Image (cartoon, rainbow, N blue to C red; front, side, top):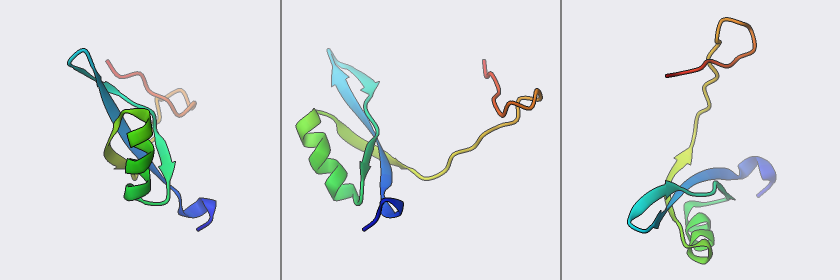
Length: 66
């Protein structure tokens, strides 16, 4: 597989009973991401499939959400 076939997997970890966002894992498959997570002490919670950039009106492509 080449770099274009890689996927981004989203992770989380628990510290003192609280869940936190973990590192993003780049891997070919969900199974590979799970193996990477084992060594990092986190777990896969999803796969990044879409990125949406909202136009904030000032042309920079970003919008502040409150």
